[in-house]
Length: 303
Image (cartoon, rainbow, N blue to C red; front, side, top):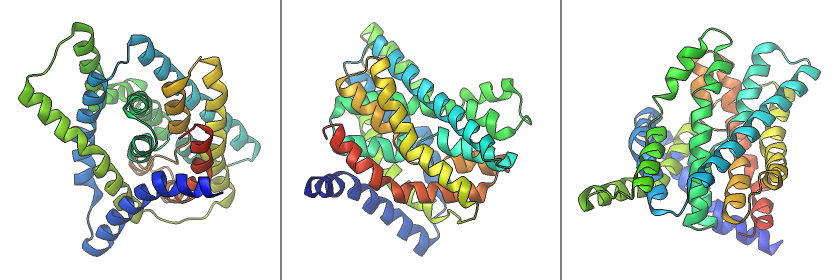
């Protein structure tokens, strides 16, 4: 028990304290999350991804393996949620909201921060690949699911090209393949901006949680929390053996899959009017419950 308390205190508690600062700032100063979110989305996160991938030793097979692992894990979670939701006779809009909240994990704000605290830069590099894959799927597959047929597949795919982290990954892979290197002033600028990403993401998580709304739908909420916090990492553990993941890649893939619901799912839910209050509730509840599942998982992964 003392080992678990130590794992929680050293790795998870700092994230909640940092998020708490954002929550209190939002409460006192009524800070809107949009501007900070856009800065993180368009500047800090792409710089972090580029900096990590260009300084790591990952190769093309590492990228492919982690990307396909993340894709299959997300797809399995979504499929299982749909099947269980149909068995529970969930109303269509609620079922769509549940699928959104179970498929897409908070692999950025929470996942990258926790990985940095619990493991080393190599694990963080693999976790970044999971995060990029998750973000890409959210703004493509997630858009299609949330739109309920109101948005074309073409429109959803075009949305992929608005995800700046995708360009950061492509640029990093190109630089690695051709053995290019940024001029020193640019290299230091990218590193500085990338270093700001994780603290900003932690504070942003608190600001966004402040604006979350509580709602009913206990059965759907229970299903969402179960699938996101328990079923998703269990599936990831099984898939890690099938995919041949080991070491840093296995630690990153399993830990990222165990994160609570992505806060950005509230953006999709609001945009397409898919039970945004319920989605906000799931984000809040799954985040609060996550230490109960993530802490023993850290012990399992050898943090």
